[in-house]
Length: 293
Image 1 (cartoon, rainbow, N blue to C red):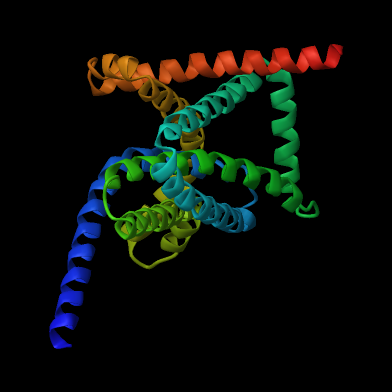
Image 2 (tube, rainbow, N blue to C red; image 1 turned 90 degrees about the vertical axis):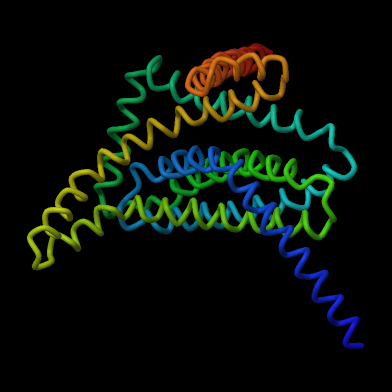
């Protein structure tokens, strides 16, 4: 009895050790996507009324957990029964990210008058406390959760590649662990970023002169940081989406990687922009064709 218990404990310790090592490897491989995920999700609360920032972040965070609750079992099933399907599904998601990024650029630069009017209306609505923006926020949250689904799929796919060939329990534990840690990490950081001005205001009221100066600097930096993250979020769509498409075609992926780290990122973004333009043109063509009918 005692021997059996010791053997069981030894097996558990071995599994936990494997899980720990594989989780560290998977975390390193998904770190790049984490940065893009952070930029994309931080931009989603740009323009949201201050009192609604944290509720919006929490709503997207809950949606992200739901996404991963779907993706982890799906990844295990696909990895076991249909491993060839992982790359095509990721490429569809990558093309969609590129489409969303290019659609934003097209709307901003090709429809400047409309964009300016929409921005003005939104700013007036945010400033008017009598207007309930919860309904508008639902659309923003839905879009953010949709984008999170694609980024989460890439994180899960990368992790799945790390644990392939391992026992089922190890695969499940590593995938679930990465899903939870990444979600908490991303949305915890996003919550901190969007409340940076509040933290700065709090510090500016302290007695220490150096702390007050730091607080004022944080308050001044907060609007610029949110604008920067909004731009970086759009860039991240092309980097992530283009990167998925490039790596989906091994010959192209290896050729671009040979350019070096910085040049390969530029190449990924370039592929993302071109793919986004092609998909947007196809979608617009389909819409016009359907209207004629």
